[in-house]
Length: 396
Image (cartoon, rainbow, N blue to C red; front, side, top):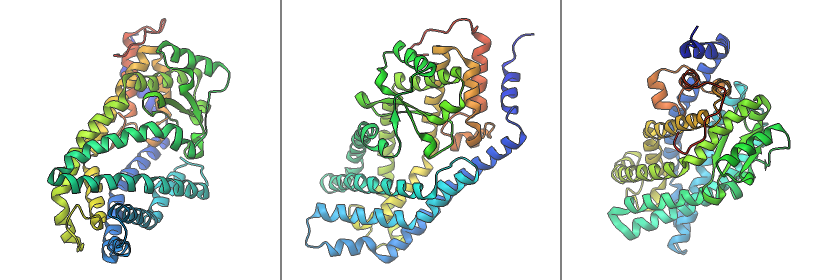
């Protein structure tokens, strides 16, 4: 009997069991509702800070300081205040919700301590970035949104360069893969595409999450492939090869650079719309200033950008889904292990419902559905014998 990709795909997904599929569906749906919940929380916090005139008070207290210092400290004060006000929601959405579904074992104390580190980093980096944006508003006038998009692209590139060496090690330990068959297999694959051995790591992702995952981060000489210890503990050797092939695909195909380019273009649109919408929303919320170039109006600006970023999710999610599909194809071509890839993908179904409605997938999914990805692997299996891996290519 000829191999049937559709039947094989159904067997993989049904093999999870009805209870696991129902739990996955519930988790995914609740996570999507939390996007709306996060927006509502942002709106409430904005109203509170506008009513309290927090940024106006900070600005007034720093009257004798220079404009740059006043701006940085006003932004920093807003950042800390908004983070603390949203802390109950953050604990609920990022910790309790994950823990209730068994997707994290992280103690609350460790979650909060890492949150404090993240708040410090975001306050410092965010204050410097917004100082640059406000400076461009002052110098370039009505075209600030165009210049600021270019500045945003530069800032993202700098963060991508710094993240692997300066930021990510603050949250996890990154180490070479221990000696053994897994290390030998991974390094052999890396050698095929000229990835240096010192750019592939294992990290203690189990500290924050029980999810089966791996990632590519950084750019240029700082780029690296990192595999969570959860993945190494749960996966067979072939599944490790398939997952590594997927991450190598991201690395070789330059998906990070493409993301920077597309997000820079998106930033132009978001900043342009923010310029038009800010005065109206400021007046509606009773903000003392409706001038977008005035740092005292920062709470309203951040609310506008939050709303616009949420509305842009279908665009950004489509970008990442395309990249994930290309990385899957690269893995299949590089190692020709469709069943191993399917097995690894099924392990991610607990936090990403494998059979979403097409509209749900389009709006909310950062990855193609597990069912869709498994089907493509099975279709590959039907067309390619497993006797000999296909040669890797930069354009699978």
